[in-house]
View: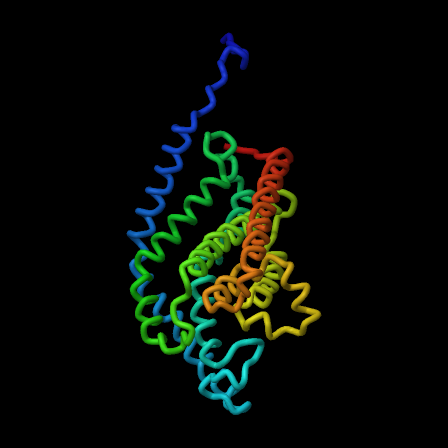
Length: 296
């Protein structure tokens, strides 16, 4: 039996997709991912409401702290790190919003698993960019989450409205708050995606991910306002990207960021975002070059 060998050169290269075709593909991915999440995420509303329950413990804890210094009602007579009692409660509520934007559960470990188990091959042979695909699915996840969880958020913030002693911030401050949430989401995504790309070099990234997330949990301000840190430590932490994941948006809303520093801080956050985008892209490009896949 004879065999015929067809030179690879006989197959013309596929034309590069146009911008319109790319947008159509991205829209289809986003729409499909959003539909999937809206179908099986009906528990978001109750789950979101339950996540606020630990705040009650925080309220009692900080009430006891401020009561010990003679300021249980959060007057301006006593503050810790620039926060009174009511400010502290409002701060924790706002960090819940910020972390809901910036947290990316399972992203880094999922990328590493796809690399380890060979699932990454489909992105190498199909005209779909891995990073863009994952970003769109995460956007769909967040949209589905907030579409359903907005009611519990609104209820909790309505019940806790008295803790926001400064009231609603001015329009420029509120826009800066929204911008910091969006950039916090993108920083969180590209930071974790870059960690996941380490899977091209190491089979397991869970230990590294645990260490980084541990630092992130404490240095993002999720546990306490960063202004409570010693001045020498705070100077270093202020130049790290972690504070933009939780502390910075909350501090903007509560107007704890001086007006003359707000624009500079927003630019620094944007700089960190660009850095992690480039880092993630470089890690992916270099990882693909050394990747070897076998089997069907």
